[in-house]
Amino acid sequence: MRVLIIGVGTRGNVAPYTGLGMRLREAGHEVAVAAHEPYAELVTDAGLDHLPLPGDPLSALTGRFSISAFKEYSEQLMEGLTAIAEQEADLLLLGMAGAPGCHVAEAMGVPSMGVHLQPIDPTGDFPPLLSLFRRSLGRWGNRRAARLAFEVPAAGPMLAGMSTKMRTRLGLPPMTPRALYRRRESTRWPVFHGVSPLVLPRPADWRPGLEITGYWWPLRPRGWQPDPVVRDFLASGPTPVFVGFGSLAGARAEQYTELAVQALRRAGLRGVLQTGLRGRISDDVLAVGDVPHDWLFPRMAAVAHHCGSGTTGAGVRAGVPAVAVPVMNDQPFWASRLTALGVAPAAIPCRRLTPARLAAALTTTITDPAYRQRAQALSVRVSAEDGAAPVVEAVNQLQVTRGPGRRTG
Image 1: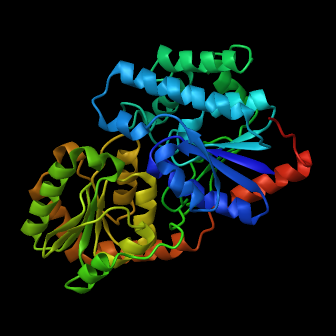
Image 2: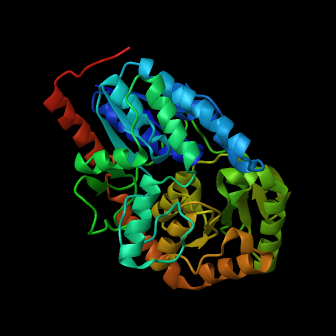
Image 3: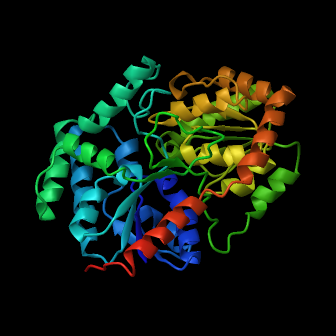
């Protein structure tokens, strides 16, 4: 089958699909990933085809938010997704932000499945991840709020208008967000979640078809070797800690770097920073660019990070304690899961982060052996999971039931 994965978003929204795509390719399928141009090499290094999506989500996120900028990015994304209908495909796999791809699949006459990195379906277990609610609203309230997020998107008329425009351009009849959600539920549209069930147990009140499979580990870049500067730094003294803030760090590189350096100095620790700058900052602090977390994190004494889904998984896999510094969107949720699992102390929201608070949290995670013991025990179990296997099995089964598949374009 020709499988097309739509990975809209920044690096963390694309990288897990390289691991999933590789497994599908090993199973005999042709795999392409639609992603924004800055992440093309991430896809091609995994031996997968890259389909470019216009626009740069990182610029939209790190710049000053405006309705006009969001509208411009949405228009570009809509054009890019609509153009995918001209490609050849037998199946579309849609990331959460690529949900409008369901219109594309309908226009192409091919099935689709969800491959989500965050749990957004209604449940009483927790409030909706991408809403303004951070505290539980009670089981009924949590479910109702999540369902409303599907039926009445937070961006209101703008996203509803994008859906209407896409369907018009694709020659499809109009359909409201509520009608789309009802169709999604009545058909039990399958959604696989690339996160460990040990980190996020499957909610018991989820409908059939919503599965938590285990992480889809990103691939290392082809031919990657660690920079000798990094190796030398790691060997030159006590085990350092990691401090990083994800894709958003670049917009505030100097601010985040200075804060981290002050925290490390207070705590008397060596550190590897991923804050947007590069190079030796002092004898005890090294700033790095893109270094695969599966190589770097096991060499750290602790990891302080923004709690994106992929970074959270990498830290869990490495078996090192964490300091959770969530910034936005689903990150407070993953931070709360790390705390609940006992591998991190209470989270420090990024807006409240100070050198003193970061230093204290890092000291706690390193000096209390219980954090490392729990992290190592969790790592052993998570590392034994095969998160890609259920998705590969579902795709293989679809091929059996549909035959060779219908190709368009």
